[in-house]
Length: 366
Image (cartoon, rainbow, N blue to C red; front, side, top):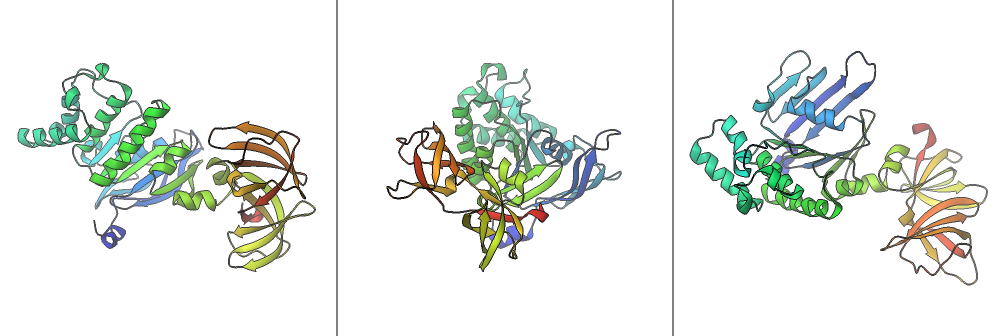
């Protein structure tokens, strides 16, 4: 699809969405607005109970809307107390965490089921079903039943069933969480290939940070029913909006400091503690003396072995394979560092620390 055309269209638009359960005053989702472009792969990440699955169920039509509006393609799918298109008529594919395959149907029958519901002709059904069976490598399993398949094979069947009708929108609710690590990574690779070849519009829910980074074109961090930040995985990792995003999306050293000098071009010199000074990127213009929260990823710190000078002491060491995770006392400040430096250093050794990157936001904006 032409990039300019993709920017002007939307596959999904959610306006002013809010929902709570029963008489509870706790809002599962509130003040929620989201636009997804055709062919975009959007990943929603957040802790359990933040509203991720509820959002997908509202879009699919499994849960009734209490406030706001949902537009799928060019059709209004749901409004509060008004329009409510049934799930089977929303042109949405849904991949569940539990696969939700019909146990009494073969692989081929499971995949064909959505087309039967939409009254495709026999010829059309056969053509489309055969196409996705080949695409997902299921030909030799097409006459088997779900109980005769492995977890990865069942997941492929669930994906094929969701995509066979070429829906306007594909919703995926933590579909890989029940798979082992190696199989999960393999299916993630297959998802990326599928998206590249078929270009479906995907809204994917997970709580796995690595999975979110690997799959997302655009990432949305959700907490307590509200969007905390939206953007590319790179932007969210390097420039978090608040402490929740910083701590949820990867490990981080979170420190308090004050501005010593605003150097322009988005950088400020910050004092941490009594005599530690670092240069950080900043979210907005900072005046001298302003209190800030400083975020330093463990990988943003460099350890240097100097014979003549040191400014930190190793208090803990843990070998992680590709890197070593160190705990340090850095001029009186606890600091976590991840580095590929030789694991020859031991607890109690002195070392020189240099902060290569840091990100600061005003404390009054938190």
